[in-house]
Image 1 (tube, rainbow, N blue to C red):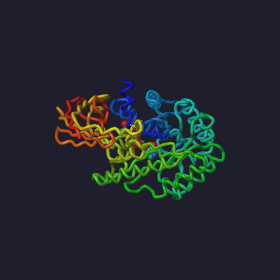
Image 2 (cartoon, protein in one colour; image 1 turned 90 degrees about the horizontal axis):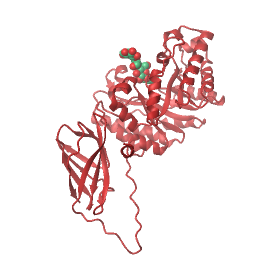
Image 3 (cartoon, protein in one colour; image 1 turned 60 degrees about the vertical axis):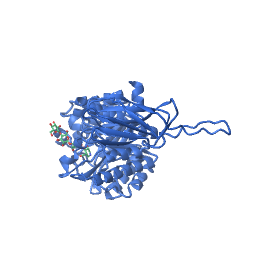
Length: 438
Ligand code: G3I
C-alpha cells in the first residue's frame, strides 16, 4: 500500500504543493469526514492541510459556559495526523457562530470568557494545530466591526485576544482573517494598520485573505496587496478560496473559473512568505455558496461525483504539478548516437492501485519497443475516466483511447515504463489493452 500510495501522489495537488513547500488546504465538513470514505480518501490524497469548516468555532466548542466539546476538532486533528497534514485552526473570536451565553455577557465578564475560551481551546490543541485565525472578520466598512465583542469589551479586545493566544500556545502562528480584503481597499487598509499594531507588539504572524471570489473578479492588485502584508514580516495565506458562478455554469465560465483559481495560486507562489492556499470545501455541493447566494454556485474544484473540474487542473498546473518529469539524461560514449527506438510491437497493462469505493486510481505501463504509443480498450460496464495525467484521452461510449504526450512516448525494446495514470469512476476494473506503436 505504501509504495502504491507514493506512486498515487506523483501528480496530485498535494505532491505538487509539497515540492513547493506550501500548503494546499481544504475546509473539512465533520459529517462527511465521519461518513464518507471517498471524501476522506480524496482529501488525504490531494491536500496537505485541513481547516475545520465549522468544527472549531465557538458555538461548537463551548456551547454552554465552561463546557468544552472538542470532539469535532479532535476528529480532524486525528485525520490530519494519520495523513501527515497540517491543521489551520478556525476560529476563536468571531461575531458569528458564537453561543448566546457569551453574547449576553459584558465588560470584564465577557473579556474573561473570551480569554478562557482562547486559552482552553489553544491549550487543548497545542502542538496539533499549527496556526489559528484568532480573530475573524473584525473589520467592516473600513473600521472595527461593531460586534458584540467590541461593544462588550471595547476596542482593545483584539489585542487582548492575541496576547492570550500567544501565551496559550507560543508555538502556533497567529493570523487575522477576513473576506473582501483580497485587493487594496479601505477594508484591507484598516487591516494593514491593525496588522502593523499587532506585529509591532509581536502578537501577529500571518494575514489570512479569505478570497470568496466572484467569477472573473480576482482583484488586479491582489498580489500587490498580499505583498504589502508580507513586507511587514508576516506570512500571508489564502484561507477560504472559492469562485462562485451564476448557475447554470457554462463550459466557458468553468474555464474562466479555472483561470481565476490559477491566478490566485500563482499569486501565492509568487510571494515568498505565502504559506498556502485553502479551498473552502471539496465539492461544489458541499459549499456554503448556494445556501447564501441565490442562483449562484459551482465554486470549488470538484463535482459532486468527485470528478475534477477544469479549476482542479488549473490549480495543479499553477502548483507545477502537471509538468512532465525532465527527460532522463543518458551518457553516451563520444562519437556514438543512440538511434531512436524503433516503432514495433508494444504492449500495455492497466493496474488498479487504489480503490476507495466510488472511485479508483489506475496506473498504466507500456512495454516497448515503441516511439510513441496509442492504447485502446473497452470498459466492460459503467466505468469512465474522471481525470488523468500524462496522456491524451478520448472516451466514446465504452471505448477509450489514450496516447502519449510526447516526452513519455519512447520506450526501448523490452523495457516497461509506467507512462500515465487516471482516476476511474464505476467499479474498478483492469481491462486488457491494445497498444499501437508509433
Ligand atoms: O449545526 C447546525 C445543525 O445542527 C443543523 O442540523 C443544520 C441544519 O441546517 O445547521 C447546522 O448549522 C449550520 C452550520 O453551518 C454547520 O453546518 C448553519 O445552519 C450554517 O449557517 C453554517 O454555515 C457556515 C457558515 O460559515 C456560518 O456563518 C458554513 O458551513 C461555513 O462554510 C461558513 O464559513 C465561513 C467562515 O467560517 C468564515 N468566512 C466566511 C465563510 C463562509 O460564510
